[in-house]
Length: 247
Image 1 (tube, rainbow, N blue to C red):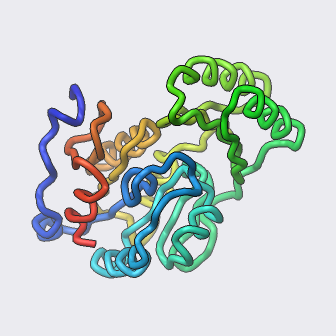
Image 2 (cartoon, one colour; image 1 turned 135 degrees about the vertical axis):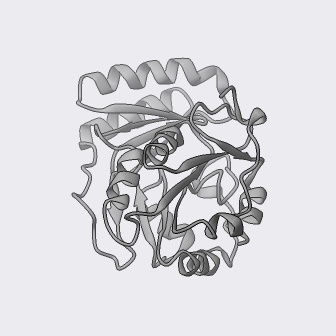
């Protein structure tokens, strides 16, 4: 597929529900809320939490948030959600009842954090500390994308880390911290098991999620204008996602 502009819109969700059990995996930034210049500046609708709980009930519990944010950060914006969720690019996973699924992800050493913060300060970037790693934000400074990614790759290569690149950000994460891993972990257990998975996301990091649901008999929905190699359908923006979900 050449990109989201060439992709059709997905069938109405009510029609898909008639075809059998669905599992829905939702990215957060750029999918449920509009992206802001800094991660802390997002505007979250007051009723988003209650609407997500309603969607969970419609899907008999087969709903999960899968975000690049740490789950503590996600909770600071969304409040407590009694749904399955995976943060830190899928590395930190919890079931709807609050029990952890898998192992707790490891953060970066203080020395590594100090070096990343120093680089960010020197080059006018915003550094975000995360439970699973760290992020160098260059949103609004596209000319710094190349140098930032190059620095991040070199930094990661000597510390058993991986670099995940998204919209205006280079994230340093532990190996295996992918949204595909989160999808596969949830789909292996009830209530997700034996359902048809759908992943909705807007960024490069969501391509892993699209690939995972496709391998499990489902499909991905790309949000926005970014080209997607794996999505089957597209929605134009966050408002279109809300309309399709009817939340």
